Image (cartoon, rainbow, N blue to C red):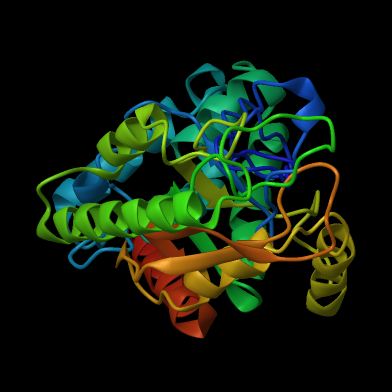
Length: 338
C-alpha cells in the first residue's frame, strides 16, 4: 500500500502515506480534468501489470496460511530478509530487530497487515536500501499500525476494481463541446445494456476462475464502449490507503481525518464504490455494484447512473477478528524466533 491519498480514479500507486502515482485514468483531454474517485477511506489504483495472481496471493487472508506451517514460515522469513536494507544491517542490529521487528513482519506477512509488494518497492525510494535499523523498523511498524487502524474503522481492502461505464454520452459537457450522440437516450440505453452484459459475463468468469482480474482490467481498458468520454476505463489494482503519517493517532482522530479529507470533491463515486466494499467480508468477487455520480467538468449538480463496478478482493482486514488473527500469528512468530 503505498500512497498518500489520491482521491482520483483507479490506477494509481499504493503505499502507506507515501504515494499514489501512475494514474491510469488520466483524461485524454486536459480540460476534462475529471476528479476520478476517492473511495471512502482513500482508495487508489495501482498500475502494476500482473502484480500478483489473484489465486496465488501470499498474504495470510486465506485459509491455511499460518506460521505454524514450516513452508509458510520459511517464505515469510525469506521475505523479511529480502526487505530493503535488512541484509546490510550489522549483526547487532539484525539481532535486535529479530526480537522486535521480525515477529511483527512475519505475522503481517501471513495476515495482510505487513508490507505488500508495492509498499516494499516503495521502501527503496522512501527510505533507501541502506537505511538504519530504526528507520526500517518505523517504516514497517507504520504500515502495520495504519492497517490496524483501518481494520478498526472502515476496513482495509486490497485487490482490483473493474469498471463498466455506460459509454461516451453519459458525462457532462461544455456548451460548445461536441460529443457524438450526447444526451441520446437510445444510445445511452444501448450502452448501459452493453455494460450490464459485460459485467455479468466477466463476474461469472472471475467466479469460475477462468480469467484473472488483471486480464479483465486489460480487456476493459481496450474496450472503447466501456469508458467515459475522453477518459480511459480506469480499471486496475488498488489498496485502501491511510491518510495519516503515523498509526499512533487516537482512533477517533483517525476517523475525523478521513472525514475531512474526503468530504470535498466527491462526485458520488466514493459512496458507490464504498457500498460495494462494505459488503465484502472475505477475499473473493463482489456482487455487481452501480456507480451513481456527477460526472465531468463542469459539474451539473445532478448525480446519475454512470456505470457498474465489480471488486475482486485479495485481502480484507476488517474488525477485531482480523486483528486477533494478527496477534495469534505474532505469538507464533515470537515462539519460533526465540
